[in-house]
Length: 325
Image 1 (cartoon, one colour):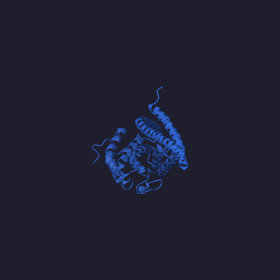
Image 2 (image 1 turned 180 degrees about the vertical axis):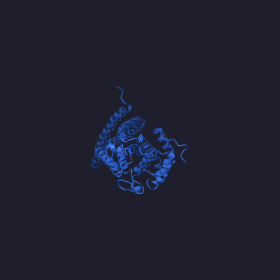
Image 3 (image 1 turned 60 degrees about the vertical axis):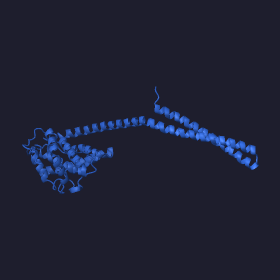
Image 4 (image 1 turned 135 degrees about the horizontal axis):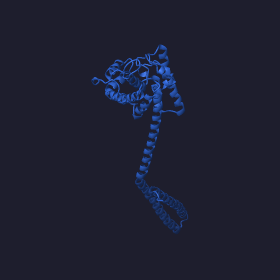
């Protein structure tokens, strides 16, 4: 089996270092004895002894200097050798880092796919929502990415977290009865009150998950979204009556995405709006229902949002013209 060159170099360097240190220790001890003889000879006046001691001392000093020089050369050898082999070490570490990143990415992708699939099955309980989760998730990613410039907290991980957090916005509806979710007629006040519970039910469920798993950025976003996506900028929303910047940014983003999807999707009690009419309705909700900054982001990306809508909802009513700029 071939030896790794870096390991071979380090082993030989360690042997050389031990030899140099041993020689230096012996030389230092001998030098001490010779100097002692010099001192004694100086006190007794024995010149011969003194010359012999000085000669021995000089030789030992030379030997010590040689060992010191050897240590210096050893240090240089170590430095050069480490520089030479550092590329191999760096390559190994880089490969391990990339492998770890790939493994984590695959694991996170599997987790996200599993969660999305389960929530997608739950979404089928509600009548006629189609690919609601996919659209709201895609809309939210587009809006979040557009808001990066003015929100330093939004990075790639935040945007990817939004992809799943947006899909979990209605997870609390799992606790509601099918009869309510699949009701064909408009809701009564009692129905509406019961439906509004899904915000706190969803947040409570996700908080319970976080207690078991520990801190997780995606879960934090999902909790904010589940609890606050029905809050309104003017404070007239539910369940907490939050207003303006009190509402988490993630929830303000999903509030617009969810509204736009609701307006452009057929429901049992009304037909879908065209994208142009829905865009006007979103603009009219600026500063009342919706965060004005998120509405401005929507106006910059609404063509791409319309592409998403068309891709996931090909049967939706077609606009006769592009959305007005």
